[in-house]
Image (cartoon, rainbow, N blue to C red; front, side, top):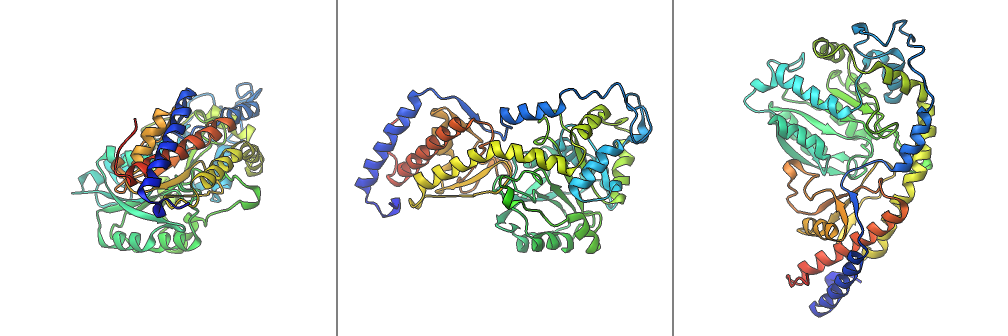
Length: 433
């Protein structure tokens, strides 16, 4: 049945029926927080076993022939094993890799801080001395990316996402016409939240496009490159560094990655990959900031995961845990909402999220209703700059943390709340709560 084809009397009857169902859910006393993409406890358990018994302190001298337990700034870019590991993951040379701490978000924040204070080697002046600094933000997107820009006082310009990645006609037009636009955020593989995979054409256009700012940078957050849900649908994205080199813009991308959702979520290792000129530029500032990140943790990780193949085997085990949650969520959406003409959603083949688009003006109400029923979701507007979705439509669903039974129930509650919010709007108010 299509809600838009029903008369008002029938819509009111349906609303009353859905309201009773929501009250039944409330009576269950469910308390489930799905506001972030938190790894499932079972994922953490199997990962912990990978690290059990690893002794990094007895033998501290590895390929670099240096005692990694003491100060050693000659390893500022990270130990060789860790750099080789990320070089293989990201398909770049070891000379293009710098290893960070447990968070790629920290590397992104620090990169913005350095650019604001000093610019990069292609900048005429520090970004903080520009009249204005703007950044292109594909939407829906990742709220923490937007939060960094907002904190730094950087103006954000939304550009719509397509099935191929950001709308490149819009990106190219903006980037080439305004020198205050200094870069763009990108999540190229299983993007947050819609699970999009950037097409080859999109990557090539990003690499080759003309920009008014000589120091334009692509912040390439490759957080989910190994996070496939279906073994027979493993995808890859064109190598942005290689494409930028071909296009004559070798220093355009900063590529970020981490093991946060591969190993222990709060105790992984991260990396930034870039041109050798960018690496030199970053290290020239980094030497004043630190003697180096946690080398023992780097050793620990390269013992647990010696190569890409070992990560692939581990990620297949993780996929076996997460896949049923995604499947039950999507099947419930299709069963409960399919054919009603009131919503649409992504069906990702990897990553951590499902992007849901409700009827315009309903996202905030849906999220509020879910919270009343015990299911906490990412706040409405979070997938847009400044926390404002102009259509109040997009909702990020994070199916990773709950157990299968919890996710099944949460999906049913969500669908009931979607129906009620839409019916409430279509019948012009008249709430029953």
